[in-house]
Amino acid sequence: MPTFSVRLGTGTPLLLVAGLLACHSIAALAEPVPPYSIRPFSGGGQIAPSNRVFSNPLVARVLDANGDPVPGVTVHFAAPHCLFGGAICFEPSAYPFFPSHVFDVAVTTDADGLARSPLVQAGNQADIGEGTLGFEFVATVQNAIPTSFAIESATFILLQADMLESVPITAGYTGSWYNPEQNGQGLTVEVLSGNRMLVNWNTFTPDGSQQAWLGGVAEILGRQAVTFAVRPEGGRFAANFEWAPVSVNYWGSLTLVFSDCNHGRLFWAGDSGFASPWGVGEVALTRLTLPEGLSCP
Image (cartoon, rainbow, N blue to C red; front, side, top):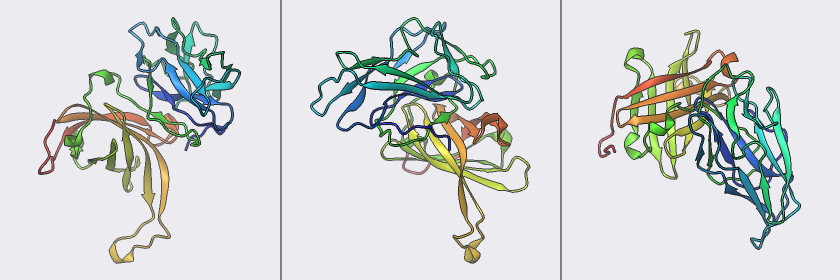
């Protein structure tokens, strides 16, 4: 999987979302320094308007074990380059993200324990970075689910351009989904407890030589379900099955959004984006089944 080159401390990630493309934009302590922790302070839930100018800065706060602010601590605002081989830059900020680099800016907390990101400031305009193929997007800054920065993976996910017009995902979206124009392949999804969704995509390899099972357990982030997907290979049928030859390899990412109870879209990105044989793309989905006992919405 894609990874950061540094081990990050403990805190809450701040997710920078572009309409067709997303990269984690993360505030993190320079090193894990227990009992210090980092928390989002402002800039969460922020959506740039059509001219893509942010109205609020992205600010993180460092606290000690008693919840008091800690001045003079180095905080890193970091973001990996994106799947398309390019990245997002902010104008008129002097801090673009360059392709093939994990971009990192070090900021020292002030007397109130606050570190202000130079990447997202009031008046900064989200613009197209080098290598992003000219996609237009609306940039969003929002709080992701609290997690530990002991994880080292960077998440690259495709998102629906009109994501704000999608609907929240509930248990009623469990079922089978397919594209009528691509009959013969499709998805089964099951909404689980804890804002999770089991996603299985039964499809075929790009060259058509064999079937491909792609899937994972997605995190439901309000109006979208996002997962790293894996692909198992090497198994045998029924009594001939042996676990040893089976390999389960990272495949890429899958993102699901729904416009209503019977329609949605699947966005995918193979491991290396456009360079992958699987490529990057999307497909419209129509509901095929609804399990007995469930209703939608």
